[in-house]
Length: 313
Length: 313
Image (tube, each protein chain N blue to C red):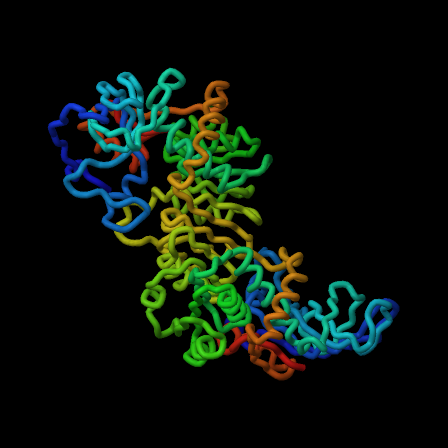
């Protein structure tokens, strides 16, 4: 588990933008589980963080000065320029967002990477059919809460797990999950006893094993993340029932959302529609101030967020 | 591990066939890893064996008397009527085979269920592309030896693992595997260090974990079997690197060959062509006599066979 002392707050000089550049004042920074993986010095799908460099991650901000023809002062943009209050960019990697359509921070959550992850993971990888049962772990997180609601909208029976009774109540009473349980106190076996068809895995570990037991023939596992393992100091054993992948003809498929940007236009159109008509809800847990960003990340790994974890600036 | 004393040889009266029936004299019985699973009293894709009943399994025999219009005396048929010397059938579940095209026992191995398993598993589930590297565990078995050769025919680099140096030599020198190793003495990590794209898993356990480490991005795992686990008396931990299914975007898919009988005509046409032109070879390990069938099954689970394990009658 990262400690606050692993982080350092630094003041650096940010120059005025030169020709082609813009100056962005960040309003919100995104705090996401995958960031923990980048703190390990191993080769993976994104390079590890470097000591002494700012953490990379998503942010949304307003352009406060522009010497770039395609971006105007007052535009809102998302970017990956890291955890900082202001940033200078030559425009590459910036995406303009419509702050009149939805609050800017929505583009870091339900209309951003976590939302797209839920959309592609559930629909393209999980391929649930109407009437099937979908189990989502980490269901009160940004990805899980969206995935579960999309499954409900598509006519599935939805089961969600989360780590507190308050989260469970939110899933059941506000988000319309058919069933929700606290994985810290409930019996996984009993909660899943009626069987499932799709498992959207955000946590790995025991819940993955329980899902493999509960999956029906031709079931699918959407391998999205394994937050229960991210702070392991030694490799943990995997599910003890891997042979069921054969006998039940299961499919388990991993994905990284960067590979699926072609789905972005369809995703924004469909999900913003669900937001407007009230069928898709979301929540944010906001920690205020750059100096509290480490606390937000540690809190995320401890499950302290409901919905999207953000840092406001 | 089953013991010889778990089996009983019984003599029963087999009546003459009545209208619609045929009498079959079996020539060969099939001995397959999945049979071990049916000795556990658990619900699975096929019902467990019942105490006091003959073991079910594939066999090939000659029709020696027929009162069925569609099947003639002298026809060769495969069937699932169990481990016995003679069987009476009403014709359901019999499949006529052409004993002039290939020896009858081929229809229990390379032209039968294990061959179809290799064909569908590798091509439909694994989807190897020319130039990719395919790793097959249990590569000297009936399924593995066929899967590896099909991969070679399709222009892949093929790595096989087996449990003896003799088997390894057979894979390399006779079947044309690019690389083969004895998993009992070699370092899995070193053997797979150059990376793989498809893993055809017949064994589970440590080789599955090593394959997940070695798989490249977008790699595929054909989950065919897990013979290393079939005699476990308690559930064994799974791979310690399941998180790599996400980070490397792997797909792991189980299958049971009964679901893919629609591929049978294509399979027989293509594979018999490869057999004729010499590009696909196979070997049989034959144990003679019904009374030695338990020895054959135990031997299979101990890895004593090279290629297809059969009992001749």
